[in-house]
Length: 47
Image 1 (cartoon, rainbow, N blue to C red):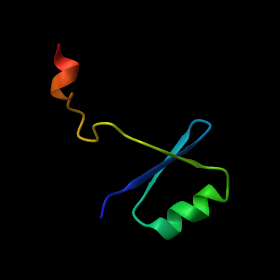
Image 2 (cartoon, rainbow, N blue to C red):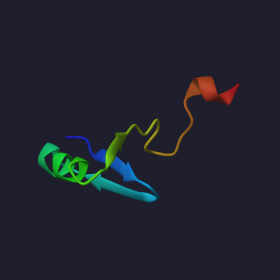
Image 3 (cartoon, rainbow, N blue to C red):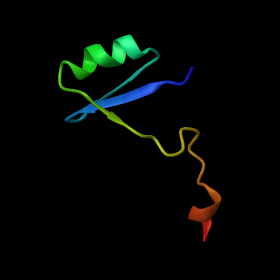
Image 4 (cartoon, one colour):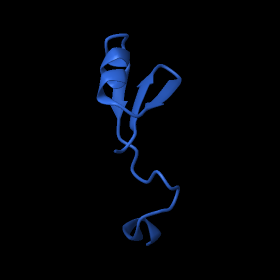
């Protein structure tokens, strides 16, 4: 299972379940997508 990342203002939280994510969303957090979690650039970024 992959982690879910949520953000509100300058606070970022990473949770491991849909239940926890929904609880944070009810407090105003929004889901965000992380392009490359391992910190590596994708091949199309290396041009």
